[in-house]
Length: 326
Image (cartoon, rainbow, N blue to C red; front, side, top):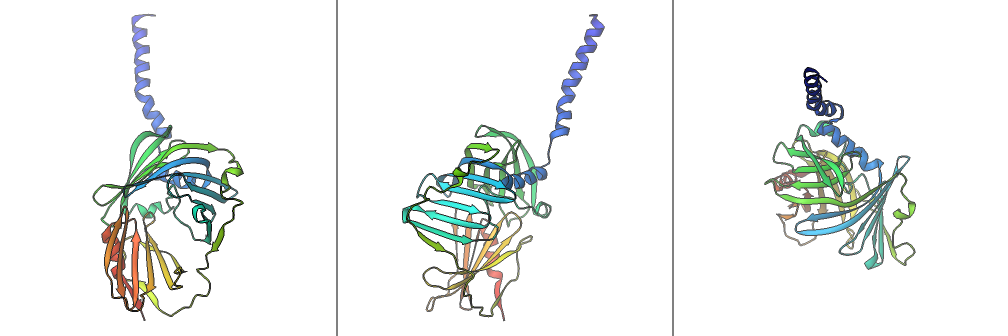
């Protein structure tokens, strides 16, 4: 091989090596929004069995999650591996909470709820008005390649997120929640994870099966007495809309409680409205527990409590704008 030919070959190899990463990146790179769309689909469609650690407010819990999806129907089993023994079985929107230490099972039907790991709603286009999305690069979690996606709020009414998504399947393997100062206030991370083509049904059966337990079934929609009051929220933070309005009964007292759920598509805030106990003085105050902020105030014989994983200013603004419309 002549010297000129050798130079030509080497030049071609160097050019290929220089261009190849860009070519591959152009074929495979996903935008942060596309990654989040994959995550939302993966949370519902995959069969898997994993162990994760959840920490907040200085406390740490180890939990196991088993998830299966068949013909549009989901079944999920969540059980604690540390602390008090408990299991949660979810069949679509029916939730069964098993408390072996108390020999008690509580069953109720609910609306769509936040999943573990978190399930980002599909309103990504709306979210881009209130959050910025960026690619944080590749990392490894529990032996799996992941892509880190950063979600930063564009105002002071919401928290920031960092999400690590499985490189091939899109499942969320780690998440961090940041408060208004940038401090991590909640973390979730898988330590072991196995995917299944078809999950063995036995893995979804509760460990308490066959034991003598006391069953309690929710009846929050039965015998509800409409008092005629209509509650309104005058000034919501931008992007928050009413997602759900339900009625509950307080355990023990039988007091009627209204529950309004507001969301911007990522953050959720609950508003609880209940009659004030007779003789109770008006109360106003706030409380913070890890990522959750609450604000309570009294209004025309009712207690209004707002709680959610949002900054204190958001909880207070919503609570102070709730009023009774005659």
